[in-house]
Length: 105
Image (cartoon, rainbow, N blue to C red; front, side, top):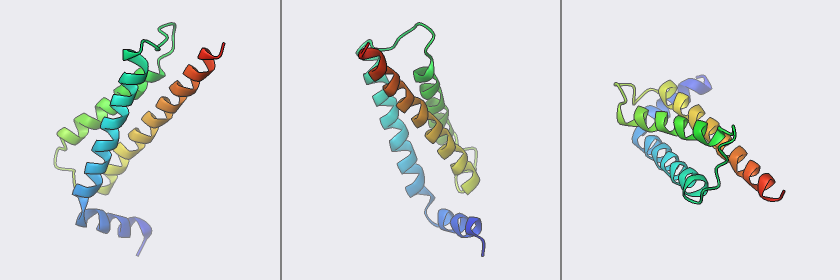
């Protein structure tokens, strides 16, 4: 049995647990993005768009969770949104590092 088949079988047994965790983490990152960069007015509008990219990816994740189109029990559909979540996390961490670097100048 290949690793992917084993993972797909496990995912098919408990998809609700995985989707719930993905949704909670995406919601947490949305709140962190908004509270760190928009409410505190720390976003630099002079050509820095990583915070916006992160929020767009998180919006795509939330829409994909709300409108699953019958693919909710497929591992490949979940992995696609997990990649979106990691990409959004990368943009979020990059935004935080940029904020720290610019605040020290």
